[in-house]
Length: 464
Image 1 (cartoon, rainbow, N blue to C red):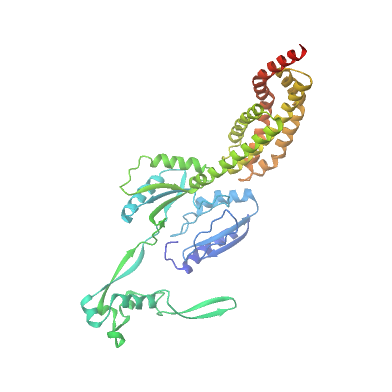
Image 2 (cartoon, one colour; image 1 turned 180 degrees about the horizontal axis):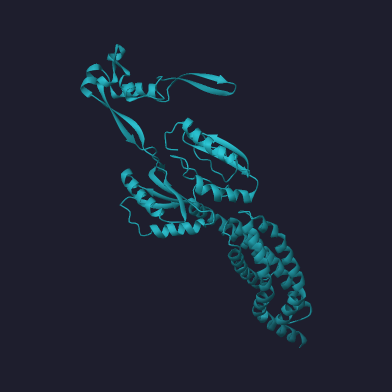
């Protein structure tokens, strides 16, 4: 609701929407929070700051399909259904970004920031991929400016400081005088005017102000002018700098990163005044923060695999060859993501790490046997890897098939967290199995053919 809306009015709208939700047979329960936000019941969920103009529901449905049906049905119908209210429907996910798309404008001049924010809002509202385009600078609030008559106030001994103190105590949050306890909870007892929560200009003008050190009182209208004004409902700062954030939602079937890329393309030619900077938040910022740590973990996994191979084969060339073959995982990953249409995220990287482990295991099965044939049977590198690939084809197929079939429930479950990982492992394992039996033997033969010639020379010298 607009900033400053009474909690009673917010509750009326919230109760109406809650009644609509409870009438739906697909809804099992509704937990409502009016005037406040819900607790942090999930690690990736960031509660919104509550207030008298804010209400929130946590809705449990009969299943995933029912949730998607409700989102598709209720979002276009009720997003702007109630006057003055913005209703936002969101499926609980694993992203910590409050809004999918955010464009932040920072600078010192508030008026310039507002103009630029309005320009960006107009541009984003023309994009069919975006919904509920808005800013975090809420509606202006009706306020009062008191202009003190210096001559009259000085004559009566009233200063700006004393007037501010008196009005703050009477019309502000109040002056604490005591504390009452209800069990373990403390309640402040404050002193303030009886009209502090709802006052008119006439009431403010009739307010008695102490004069001449408290010997007498005068009405406020006698020493000051009371002027109605409009003030900003909310001024947001980010890292100490005034910042306006343009926020937007995206459709359920639309890729957030693709939508953000289109927003960046639309705003790339936007000329900003001097001193104004434009940055992006939302899902893009979250990915940019998480991806370096994820890629660092991937590099650590590759280094560990290299030393394990080096310890096993006792030869740097073999370890390097198998390390280079790890890139074969990327082709299967790309095919799986393309076929299933999933987004590349954190769990996809975990799937790639698992896929590298499967490739290394199958590669060791084949190359280890080839090394045994070369040492014991005195075969050439070509003969050894050829016979090894033939002999180890069945165990490689069985282990790959078992690994790929084991993740089918993850794919069928449709989870936004685990489905991408299952997709990478399923398609990557099957496609990588073909590469293990074709590309890896050729790489081994080309790399080890030189060592075969050295071994044949050594054998001739021993015979002589």
